[in-house]
Amino acid sequence: MIDCQKIKALAEQQLVGTDVFVVSCKVSPSNEVELLLDSDTSVQLETCAAVNRAVNEAMADDEEDFSLTVASAGIGEELKCERQFRKLVGRPVEVLLLNGTKIRALLDAADAGGITLSYEEKQAVEGKKRKQLVKVVKRYAFSEVKYTKEYLDFK
Image (cartoon, rainbow, N blue to C red; front, side):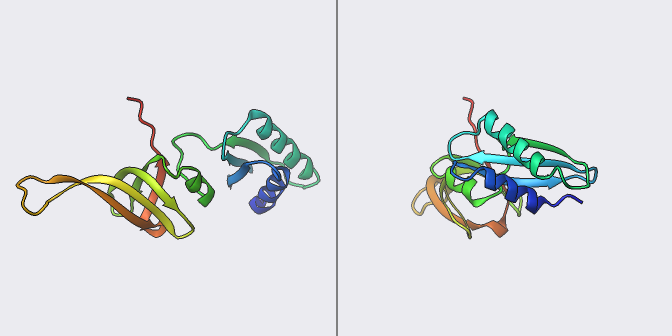
């Protein structure tokens, strides 16, 4: 079985000194390896190719055959690591909570424990007949969140 940690370490070694980082590594039962990269700015095709070459050369001595795909974490993909969350602070996100509630909000902060979101919600206000839009700022632990994605509005 191909060791994902070894592949991640080889990729991270290749990426030292850049703003590109490893998001995830998956290995299928047929030894197809998918390595996802992201960046604080953008991931260039040349970077993916260089990482692919470096990992393949370093793993050439292994007795197991494998297929390696190095790609950029796509728009609309679930956020997987803290650095991706920090990159999106101040931008709109879509969050699905474990209880099934879907929230479109502004990502105000992110750290190792969770995320802070701000959004408008209709709430009953004392002295008013109808519910009013009220700005809500709420923190969610990662244990409460099923997924978080960057929200793109094409309107």
